Length: 333
Ligand code: 5AD
Ligand code: SF4
Image 1 (cartoon, protein in one colour):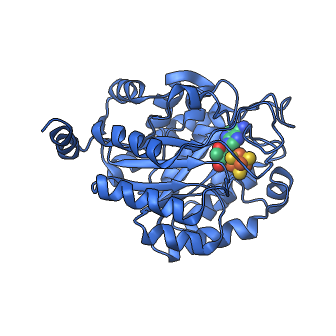
Image 2: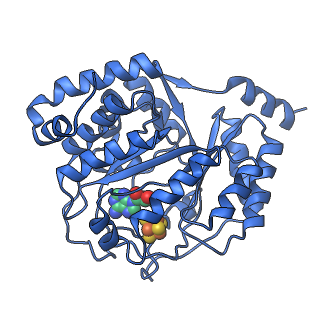
């Protein structure tokens, strides 16, 4: 059954119907995605960012964090760890860091694909010239994650000075045309965001036919202009997630680290029960991870935590065991 905009808004407004909504989302997830939870091994390869988003601790004007950039050798090492853990997908994530040249990133992508042909490569490196996205695709990148953040153009412009929603949308459409599996997503609870906006976010992702949707609560960061704003509401975030599942049907929806930051393991278990089917274990080494402070008290969710969460949720991890066996074979001939 199709959900209209006004029905979506009604569900968002009214927490009393949320148990029923979660159940409906859980059934939709079971029908379209099955019981496995997909894993994505995350490498936060640079915390350098040329933008100044009001909500984000990596923003250019935050002088308090130590900036780092991984080189090709380091990135390949962590990709190897992800492959060895039997995880079928790596996500390479960074701020909008233009110091990585197109050719450098292409070289890293193709080296990962050469070494671990069974690893899907997802990039999440922000806005770049359109020609870069094509070059990355030709080097072997499979997916691109670029959260649209909010579909409300006024809010978008306020939250992301110097950026505009039209360009974001054009990039997402270009990525789709270039053959990527495309991920978008939204932050729930940005100051000034309305329920209509969140309904718009879900319908926008539907019209874009996204393959992935990252939905997480806003969490304030102490060294940003939004430091005194309240965090996004857990219940509302779960309702957005569940509605996204009902509307987007077979899209991949992570139970985000931001959910774990709001409410620990329980937050992610609730997410898995409200439509989510993806978890993203972090493979960034501790030293760098501490500097990748998008928001405060960011929870560390590594492989052990992820496997435990999946078991507690009564689900099954989707592990690439033949791939893992291949790696073990390689390092121990
Ligand atoms: N709270 C929640 N999510 C945030 N992001 C950035 N800052 C915050 C915050 N304070 C998310 C954005 C961005 C990704 C890198 O992290 O959605 O796309
Ligand atoms: Fe940079 Fe992304 Fe943070 Fe904005 S949200 S400051 S683009 S890392």
